[in-house]
Amino acid sequence: MNSMTGYAFKEVIVDNTQLSVEIKSVNSRFLDLNINLPPFLNPLEARVRKAVSEKVVRGKIDVTLRVRDLSSTATVTSDPEAAKLYYKAIKDIAEALGKGEDDIPLSLIVSQEGVLNITHQYDAELYWKKIESVFSEVLTSFISDRSREGENLKNDLLEKLGKLDECASFFKEWQPQMEEKFKEIITRKFNELLGEHADENRIMQETAAMLVKYTINEEIIRLQSHLKAIRSELLENPVPGKRLDFICQEANREINTIGSKNQFTEVGAMVIKAKDALENIREQSKNVE
Image (tube, rainbow, N blue to C red; front, side):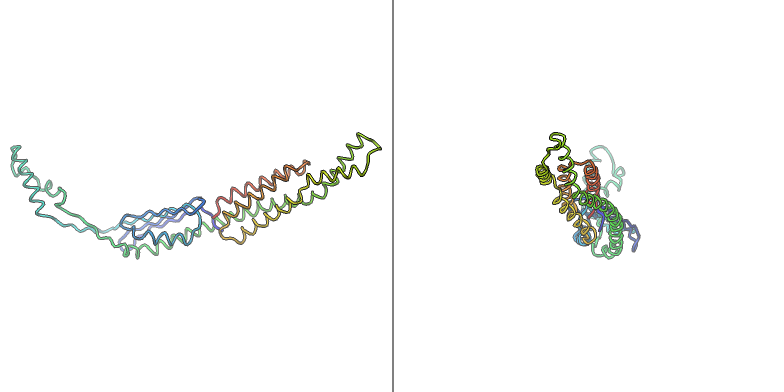
Protein backbone atom coordinates (compact mmCIF):
# COMPACT_ATOMS: atom_id res chain seq x y z
CA MET A 1 0.00 0.00 0.00
CA ASN A 2 1.34 3.41 -0.96
CA SER A 3 0.80 6.92 0.28
CA MET A 4 -0.16 9.53 -2.31
CA THR A 5 2.49 11.91 -0.97
CA GLY A 6 6.15 11.47 -1.82
CA TYR A 7 9.31 13.33 -2.80
CA ALA A 8 12.65 12.61 -4.46
CA PHE A 9 15.38 14.82 -5.92
CA LYS A 10 18.86 14.47 -7.36
CA GLU A 11 21.30 16.82 -9.06
CA VAL A 12 24.44 15.62 -10.84
CA ILE A 13 26.89 16.55 -13.61
CA VAL A 14 27.10 14.11 -16.51
CA ASP A 15 29.40 14.70 -19.48
CA ASN A 16 29.74 18.42 -18.73
CA THR A 17 25.97 18.82 -18.38
CA GLN A 18 24.34 19.72 -15.08
CA LEU A 19 21.14 17.69 -14.56
CA SER A 20 18.48 17.84 -11.86
CA VAL A 21 15.40 15.64 -11.50
CA GLU A 22 12.64 16.34 -8.98
CA ILE A 23 9.46 14.30 -8.45
CA LYS A 24 6.87 15.22 -5.83
CA SER A 25 3.23 14.33 -5.24
CA VAL A 26 0.20 15.23 -3.14
CA ASN A 27 -3.32 13.79 -2.80
CA SER A 28 -5.70 13.64 -5.74
CA ARG A 29 -8.75 11.53 -6.57
CA PHE A 30 -7.17 10.56 -9.89
CA LEU A 31 -3.75 10.54 -11.54
CA ASP A 32 -2.84 14.15 -12.37
CA LEU A 33 0.60 14.10 -13.96
CA ASN A 34 2.46 17.33 -14.81
CA ILE A 35 5.75 17.09 -16.70
CA ASN A 36 7.99 20.17 -16.65
CA LEU A 37 10.81 20.08 -19.24
CA PRO A 38 12.97 22.61 -21.06
CA PRO A 39 11.34 23.29 -24.46
CA PHE A 40 14.10 21.50 -26.38
CA LEU A 41 13.38 18.30 -24.39
CA ASN A 42 9.65 18.22 -25.18
CA PRO A 43 10.15 15.13 -27.40
CA LEU A 44 10.93 13.23 -24.19
CA GLU A 45 7.65 14.07 -22.44
CA ALA A 46 5.75 10.97 -23.59
CA ARG A 47 8.62 8.75 -22.43
CA VAL A 48 8.72 10.35 -18.98
CA ARG A 49 4.93 10.28 -18.65
CA LYS A 50 4.79 6.57 -19.52
CA ALA A 51 7.52 5.68 -17.02
CA VAL A 52 5.72 7.46 -14.16
CA SER A 53 2.18 6.32 -15.02
CA GLU A 54 3.35 2.69 -15.02
CA LYS A 55 4.35 3.08 -11.37
CA VAL A 56 1.67 5.42 -9.99
CA VAL A 57 -2.12 5.01 -9.95
CA ARG A 58 -3.34 8.09 -8.03
CA GLY A 59 -2.01 11.46 -6.91
CA LYS A 60 -1.06 14.86 -8.28
CA ILE A 61 2.48 14.27 -9.55
CA ASP A 62 4.92 17.01 -10.59
CA VAL A 63 8.02 15.89 -12.50
CA THR A 64 10.64 18.55 -13.19
CA LEU A 65 13.79 18.04 -15.28
CA ARG A 66 16.38 20.82 -15.50
CA VAL A 67 19.36 20.78 -17.86
CA ARG A 68 22.27 23.23 -18.10
CA ASP A 69 25.27 22.72 -20.38
CA LEU A 70 28.51 23.79 -18.73
CA SER A 71 30.12 24.33 -22.15
CA SER A 72 28.52 26.31 -24.94
CA THR A 73 26.48 24.52 -27.59
CA ALA A 74 25.98 27.71 -29.60
CA THR A 75 26.78 28.20 -33.28
CA VAL A 76 27.18 31.82 -34.44
CA THR A 77 26.80 32.86 -38.09
CA SER A 78 26.88 36.31 -39.69
CA ASP A 79 25.04 37.98 -42.56
CA PRO A 80 27.43 40.56 -44.09
CA GLU A 81 24.85 41.69 -46.62
CA ALA A 82 22.41 42.56 -43.85
CA ALA A 83 25.21 44.39 -42.01
CA LYS A 84 25.94 46.49 -45.14
CA LEU A 85 22.31 47.45 -45.51
CA TYR A 86 22.06 48.44 -41.85
CA TYR A 87 25.33 50.42 -42.13
CA LYS A 88 24.14 52.33 -45.20
CA ALA A 89 20.81 53.19 -43.56
CA ILE A 90 22.48 54.29 -40.33
CA LYS A 91 25.10 56.28 -42.28
CA ASP A 92 22.33 58.17 -44.12
CA ILE A 93 20.76 59.07 -40.79
CA ALA A 94 24.16 60.15 -39.38
CA GLU A 95 24.84 62.44 -42.39
CA ALA A 96 21.38 63.96 -42.06
CA LEU A 97 22.27 64.80 -38.46
CA GLY A 98 25.67 66.19 -39.36
CA LYS A 99 27.59 63.22 -38.07
CA GLY A 100 30.49 61.39 -39.68
CA GLU A 101 31.27 57.71 -40.21
CA ASP A 102 33.43 57.69 -37.09
CA ASP A 103 30.33 58.29 -35.03
CA ILE A 104 28.85 54.93 -36.09
CA PRO A 105 30.20 52.21 -33.73
CA LEU A 106 30.55 48.64 -34.99
CA SER A 107 28.56 47.43 -31.98
CA LEU A 108 25.54 49.33 -33.30
CA ILE A 109 25.68 47.42 -36.59
CA VAL A 110 26.20 43.92 -35.17
CA SER A 111 23.41 44.42 -32.64
CA GLN A 112 20.81 44.73 -35.38
CA GLU A 113 18.46 41.84 -35.99
CA GLY A 114 19.75 39.25 -38.47
CA VAL A 115 23.36 40.49 -38.58
CA LEU A 116 24.52 37.84 -36.11
CA ASN A 117 22.53 34.62 -35.74
CA ILE A 118 22.99 32.32 -32.76
CA THR A 119 21.68 28.75 -32.88
CA HIS A 120 21.94 25.90 -30.39
CA GLN A 121 22.25 22.29 -31.41
CA TYR A 122 19.98 20.19 -29.19
CA ASP A 123 19.55 16.46 -29.67
CA ALA A 124 16.85 15.17 -27.29
CA GLU A 125 18.05 11.56 -27.66
CA LEU A 126 21.60 12.45 -26.67
CA TYR A 127 20.30 14.31 -23.63
CA TRP A 128 18.09 11.33 -22.71
CA LYS A 129 21.16 9.09 -22.59
CA LYS A 130 22.54 11.45 -19.94
CA ILE A 131 19.23 11.81 -18.08
CA GLU A 132 17.83 8.27 -18.17
CA SER A 133 19.80 6.68 -15.32
CA VAL A 134 19.35 9.74 -13.08
CA PHE A 135 15.61 9.86 -13.79
CA SER A 136 15.22 6.13 -13.08
CA GLU A 137 17.07 6.49 -9.78
CA VAL A 138 14.88 9.41 -8.68
CA LEU A 139 11.69 7.62 -9.74
CA THR A 140 12.70 4.54 -7.73
CA SER A 141 13.45 6.73 -4.71
CA PHE A 142 10.10 8.49 -5.12
CA ILE A 143 8.19 5.19 -5.24
CA SER A 144 10.09 3.96 -2.16
CA ASP A 145 9.19 7.14 -0.28
CA ARG A 146 5.50 6.63 -1.06
CA SER A 147 5.75 2.97 -0.08
CA ARG A 148 7.43 3.75 3.25
CA GLU A 149 4.78 6.31 4.14
CA GLY A 150 2.11 3.89 2.91
CA GLU A 151 3.31 1.24 5.36
CA ASN A 152 2.97 3.73 8.20
CA LEU A 153 -0.54 4.58 7.02
CA LYS A 154 -1.50 0.91 6.86
CA ASN A 155 -0.35 0.29 10.43
CA ASP A 156 -2.29 3.33 11.64
CA LEU A 157 -5.43 2.26 9.77
CA LEU A 158 -5.22 -1.29 11.13
CA GLU A 159 -4.95 0.12 14.65
CA LYS A 160 -8.09 2.23 14.14
CA LEU A 161 -9.83 -0.74 12.52
CA GLY A 162 -9.08 -2.74 15.67
CA LYS A 163 -11.04 -0.17 17.68
CA LEU A 164 -13.96 -0.54 15.29
CA ASP A 165 -13.81 -4.33 15.66
CA GLU A 166 -14.08 -3.86 19.43
CA CYS A 167 -17.17 -1.68 18.95
CA ALA A 168 -18.81 -4.23 16.64
CA SER A 169 -18.06 -7.01 19.14
CA PHE A 170 -19.64 -4.94 21.91
CA PHE A 171 -22.79 -4.44 19.82
CA LYS A 172 -22.94 -8.17 19.13
CA GLU A 173 -22.53 -9.06 22.82
CA TRP A 174 -25.11 -6.46 23.84
CA GLN A 175 -27.78 -7.61 21.39
CA PRO A 176 -28.91 -10.68 23.46
CA GLN A 177 -29.19 -8.49 26.55
CA MET A 178 -31.73 -6.25 24.87
CA GLU A 179 -34.57 -8.70 25.36
CA GLU A 180 -33.98 -8.78 29.11
CA LYS A 181 -33.54 -5.01 29.26
CA PHE A 182 -36.75 -4.38 27.33
CA LYS A 183 -38.62 -6.95 29.41
CA GLU A 184 -37.42 -5.28 32.62
CA ILE A 185 -38.53 -1.85 31.42
CA ILE A 186 -41.97 -3.04 30.26
CA THR A 187 -42.54 -5.20 33.38
CA ARG A 188 -41.72 -2.25 35.60
CA LYS A 189 -44.16 -0.01 33.74
CA PHE A 190 -46.93 -2.62 33.83
CA ASN A 191 -46.38 -3.18 37.55
CA GLU A 192 -46.53 0.55 38.19
CA LEU A 193 -49.87 0.72 36.36
CA LEU A 194 -51.51 -2.64 37.17
CA GLY A 195 -49.59 -3.98 40.13
CA GLU A 196 -50.17 -7.71 40.64
CA HIS A 197 -52.71 -7.79 37.80
CA ALA A 198 -50.02 -7.38 35.14
CA ASP A 199 -50.48 -9.93 32.34
CA GLU A 200 -47.30 -11.87 31.56
CA ASN A 201 -48.44 -12.62 27.99
CA ARG A 202 -49.04 -8.93 27.38
CA ILE A 203 -45.58 -8.15 28.72
CA MET A 204 -44.03 -10.70 26.32
CA GLN A 205 -45.99 -9.24 23.38
CA GLU A 206 -44.83 -5.72 24.16
CA THR A 207 -41.25 -6.96 24.57
CA ALA A 208 -41.38 -8.71 21.21
CA ALA A 209 -42.75 -5.58 19.56
CA MET A 210 -39.89 -3.50 20.94
CA LEU A 211 -37.35 -6.06 19.81
CA VAL A 212 -38.75 -5.98 16.28
CA LYS A 213 -38.53 -2.19 16.26
CA TYR A 214 -35.16 -1.75 17.92
CA THR A 215 -33.17 -4.91 17.16
CA ILE A 216 -29.75 -4.19 15.62
CA ASN A 217 -28.77 -7.74 14.68
CA GLU A 218 -28.84 -7.17 10.90
CA GLU A 219 -26.89 -3.93 11.22
CA ILE A 220 -24.24 -5.71 13.31
CA ILE A 221 -23.85 -8.46 10.70
CA ARG A 222 -23.46 -5.95 7.88
CA LEU A 223 -21.08 -3.79 9.92
CA GLN A 224 -18.81 -6.74 10.68
CA SER A 225 -18.88 -7.68 6.99
CA HIS A 226 -17.78 -4.15 6.04
CA LEU A 227 -14.98 -4.20 8.62
CA LYS A 228 -13.78 -7.53 7.24
CA ALA A 229 -13.75 -5.99 3.75
CA ILE A 230 -11.72 -2.99 4.99
CA ARG A 231 -9.13 -5.32 6.53
CA SER A 232 -8.94 -7.32 3.31
CA GLU A 233 -8.36 -4.12 1.28
CA LEU A 234 -5.62 -2.97 3.62
CA LEU A 235 -3.78 -6.29 3.59
CA GLU A 236 -4.34 -7.52 0.04
CA ASN A 237 -5.08 -4.60 -2.30
CA PRO A 238 -1.97 -2.56 -3.28
CA VAL A 239 -4.17 0.43 -4.25
CA PRO A 240 -7.16 0.36 -1.87
CA GLY A 241 -7.85 4.10 -1.59
CA LYS A 242 -11.07 4.38 -3.61
CA ARG A 243 -12.49 1.10 -2.27
CA LEU A 244 -11.78 2.13 1.32
CA ASP A 245 -13.77 5.33 0.92
CA PHE A 246 -16.78 3.45 -0.47
CA ILE A 247 -16.73 0.72 2.22
CA CYS A 248 -16.40 3.34 4.97
CA GLN A 249 -19.56 5.03 3.69
CA GLU A 250 -21.42 1.71 3.94
CA ALA A 251 -20.07 1.03 7.44
CA ASN A 252 -21.07 4.53 8.54
CA ARG A 253 -24.62 3.88 7.39
CA GLU A 254 -24.87 0.81 9.67
CA ILE A 255 -23.39 2.65 12.67
CA ASN A 256 -25.86 5.51 12.18
CA THR A 257 -28.76 3.05 12.08
CA ILE A 258 -27.56 1.38 15.27
CA GLY A 259 -27.38 4.81 16.87
CA SER A 260 -30.88 5.76 15.75
CA LYS A 261 -32.34 2.51 17.13
CA ASN A 262 -30.41 2.65 20.37
CA GLN A 263 -32.29 2.94 23.66
CA PHE A 264 -29.38 2.41 26.06
CA THR A 265 -26.60 4.65 27.36
CA GLU A 266 -23.96 1.92 27.07
CA VAL A 267 -24.66 1.40 23.37
CA GLY A 268 -24.79 5.16 22.74
CA ALA A 269 -21.30 5.62 24.14
CA MET A 270 -19.97 2.83 21.92
CA VAL A 271 -21.69 4.31 18.85
CA ILE A 272 -19.80 7.58 19.45
CA LYS A 273 -16.53 5.65 19.78
CA ALA A 274 -17.25 3.71 16.57
CA LYS A 275 -18.10 6.86 14.58
CA ASP A 276 -14.91 8.54 15.77
CA ALA A 277 -12.75 5.55 14.75
CA LEU A 278 -14.47 5.27 11.38
CA GLU A 279 -14.08 8.99 10.66
CA ASN A 280 -10.35 8.68 11.38
CA ILE A 281 -10.13 5.80 8.90
CA ARG A 282 -12.00 7.78 6.24
CA GLU A 283 -9.69 10.77 6.68
CA GLN A 284 -6.55 8.65 6.51
CA SER A 285 -7.83 6.70 3.51
CA LYS A 286 -7.78 9.98 1.53
CA ASN A 287 -3.98 9.80 1.74
CA VAL A 288 -3.86 6.25 0.35
CA GLU A 289 -3.22 5.51 -3.31
